[in-house]
Length: 234
Image (cartoon, rainbow, N blue to C red; front, side):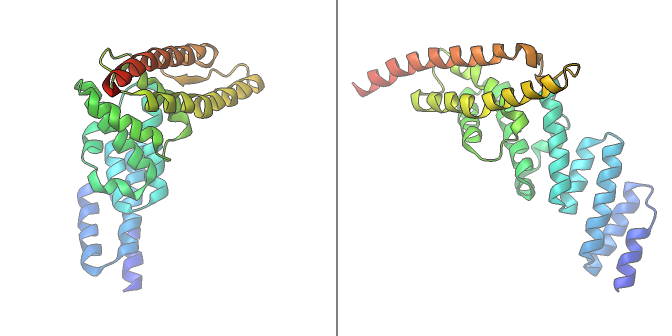
């Protein structure tokens, strides 16, 4: 049985239909290791062919946390650099499978925020964004994008983010975004000819715009929040 399991992983697979047939045998024989190996091979093949949604599905099925994380990282970094979310249909249907990797959880939850925001459903969007900000699963490279996403919510005439939460955003600005900017600046000093985009449309040399916009939005929202919250208390 062990030899059969090993041989199944060595079969040259040309199509996904063939892969599914072999996986059916693995499932019936309870060849878990062979199933995972075949799924990883299919995931790598799909990723090489730039079929990222397919690659993510195969990686999830392989139960390989590291490979799932690497694909989720690729999708998130692509969004940071372009503003486009790849394979949205696949991400929308991840559901409970997201818990295989913290990075996949972040991708799925951010996609939920993205959907709320696109539909102008700002209250649940704000709630989800604040939950993400307080989580411990945010990739370092995603802090600029996540904090910039707070600006339209902070600038809303009808406040969606209140005083305490606005203070938390300012804290994240100082403790998470500023150290990242300093880190990137030091890298740029060592590699002056290397362009560094910290976020779509924002090169490192004009990233102060992000910081200034964030601080201004927080200041305006704090003023509105203080007035509204004091009025409600009184």
